Each structure stands twice: as C-alpha cells, then as structure tokens.
Amino acid sequence: MSKIFVDACFGKETPYTPVWMMRQAGRYLPEYMKVRAQAGNFLNLCHDPKKACEVTLQPVDIVGVDAAILFSDILVVPDEMGMDLEFIKGEGPKFNDPIKNEADLDRLIGGEEAASKLTYVYETIKLIKQELSEDKALIGFTGAPWTLATYMIEGEGTKTYNICKKMMYSNPELLHKILAKVTEVVKLYMEKQIEAGIDVVQIFDSWAAAIEPAKYDEFSWKYMVEIADYLKAKYPHIPIIMFPKGIPAFLDKVYGNFDVFGVDWSTPMSFAKEKLGDRYVLQGNMEPCRLYSKEATTECVEALQKIMGGSRHIFNLGHGILPDVPVENAKHFIAECHRVSKK
Image (cartoon, rainbow, N blue to C red):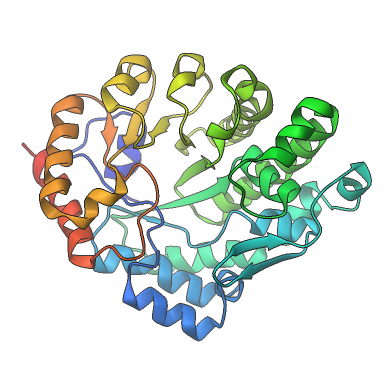
C-alpha cells in the first residue's frame, strides 16, 4: 500500500502531503464515460468487478493521485438489503419502495445476510489490489447511516428532507430502528472491504447539514462513531476518515476514535484547524469549482498550504469533482499540491 498516504492519515511525517480527489472515477474522464457506455447503465457498472476495477484505476493512471478510491455507490447497501433501486437518467437514484412504517423495515434483510450479498464489491477490491501500484493506497467507503436512511425513507434525492425529518420528530423510535439496522450492515460491509484488501476506510455523511445541530449527534454522528469503534477494535492499523458535509456549527461536538476529519469547502480550514487540528489529521477542502481555473486552483492550494503548513493535512477537494472539469485542470491541481507540499 502507499506508505505515504497511510502514514499521513495517522499523522506521521511524510516526504510531501498526499493528495486524492473525491469521486475520482467520475464523469470528468472521457475514459470513464466510455466504460460506462459499455456497461449499459450505472448499476451494471457497479456490479461488474472488471469494469469497476478499470474505472477505479483510471484517475490514478491518468491524473496521478496518491490514492485510488473504490468505484461503487453508497446505495448498493440498501439495494442489497432488499430495496428496489434504479438509476433514472436525468433524475438520479430512486427507490420504488421507500420505508414508511415498521412493516417496510421488517421486510428488509440485515446484518451478515445483507453484507454477504455485496460480493461484487469485494471482488472489485481484490482485482484492484492486483493491479494497483504498491505506492498507491486504496480507499474503501460507505455512506453514513443517516445519509443512506434519507434515500431509503424519501425514496430519492431531496432538497427538504421533510419526510425524514417528519419521522425524526414525530416517530423517532422508527428512525432509530432504521439507522440501527443500516449501521449493523455497514459495520460488516466495511469489515469485508478491509478483509478484501482496502487500506483506508471513509464514511461519507453527504446530508449531514440537513439535521439541526441539537439533533445531529443523536441521529447521525453517534452511528458513524459506532461504526468507527467497531472497525478500530478489530483493525487498528486501518485509518478511518470521517466526512460529514456542511457541519461547521457542529465542530465543537466532534468526538470519536478515528484518524482523519474531512473538511468540506464551506468550512474555513483555519477554523477546522483551530477546533480539530490537535486531535485529527484534516483533509480537504478546495472548492471543486476552482478546478475550472488553473489560477484559482493554485491560489487555493497555496492558501491551504499556508494555513496547514507544518500541520497534519491531506490535500483534497471539499466535495465531489464536477463532470465538465477539464482533465488538464485536474492534473494541474495534483501537480500544484505536490509542488507546494515539498517546499
């Protein structure tokens, strides 16, 4: 594995600050679009280990990042729990049978049975490890239970989260049962990813900002910490990255046994360093739209290095890379991160 990247996750000194980019196998690479077209649709690509391996390796080979991120999707978990998932062109993911009551939850499988159905993910990991250069790390990932639950309850992406939040306030017992069932599957899912060969775990809470600060720990963070505790007890050598998006108001309340905190682009890195830099390695947080301009990219990279110089840091975007970003600009970002970190 990449000793540089993994050491950086643990806060150990490295020759330079490593860098990787979210949604690495993303739509900005023409090579990715070609493989996706061959697969027919997005889920087919997730289910095909050879093609998923190929698109995982593309950003490493083409752009030059220091770590590969497993190509998959967070929603394969509820899909294999028994929900009816489809990706609709122009609309995104949709569950045709959202959870409305306890009977809907009871029909879903959980635990080992559900985690064992994700064999195509574990096979993809094994294939990647056979092909990935020894100086590159492989990052596995999962959606946080809250983020997964929002899709399972709403049935699709949402701007208001009103169905989830109605349940949160009017039937919190049911929401906790959903979150607990998902958490048990995710623990075993990530354990199986580790056993298959991943070097680093990342837990995404993409919709963290949908929860008010007073409720965030109860309905999201504590479940993420439960997953981290489970994995750390068994695999202390595996770094764990927590990435809750859009929670600058919650930073004083962050706790848990993990190694890296992902800082999204809306949170000032200086503020995150002040609140968390003495306890965790920080990751992030360039605004992804800066990639449209090489000058704006360099400006941000140099500013981040000035803020984090001498402190524990992994260069990364503050969220996913966008599909129309020029590949040359992505390469420029990587080169600039390596340049300033060697000063």
